[in-house]
Length: 225
Ligand SMILES: *Cc1c(COP(=O)(O)O)cnc(C)c1O
Image (cartoon, rainbow, N blue to C red; front, side, top):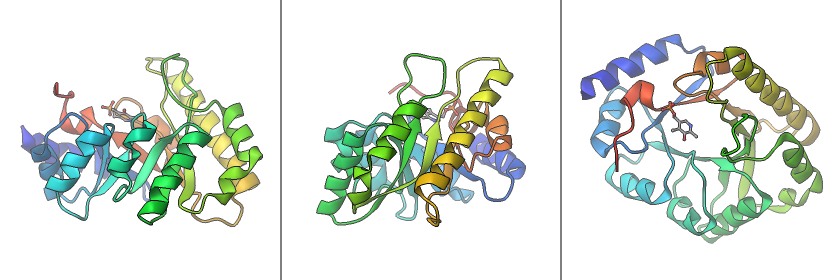
């Protein structure tokens, strides 16, 4: 079963253009599955539960780059702040301020993405484009010395309508360009567009994604636990 992981990573990696980073989403999969991916050179992994991540981080090699992709509760930031490589799921100024506060205690600077709500579904988290622009306009994020906003993250709608998915990714790329030009000119660090999962990553890459988050296409369906 773990031999499939190697094949899947090699198959997906072979299709990726230069400059696109593959994040292997290992949520609900055991450390052994991560080790199988690590053995073929995979270093970026995504997790969505702070407590699970804390356990895995302690068991697994130090040079793994951990991405936090799930809904982040303020009281769980402390579990990931010391080592997290990138938080994809900032959806309020309050959360960003709280990450800054925890990062200052260590001290380190934590790279973050603003999660944009673009899909049709009601249940998905994130800032609407208008909320995101309002937050950046308000300006107090500029004084947070221990977080760095490096780009945007989004999830496409869960639908077979590929036109709709393409339109959503396209809209987020336009928002990304607008935000970069307006608030991050001359900042090389604002460079990450995290979009695309197992079912839609080829479309996301065509529309400008730089970081794809692939779970089931690498590890199989999530295991219970
Ligand atoms: C689970 C998850 C993924 C991976 O989804 P797959 O469809 O299994 O590739 C990507 N992004 C987020 C935010 C997730 O929660």
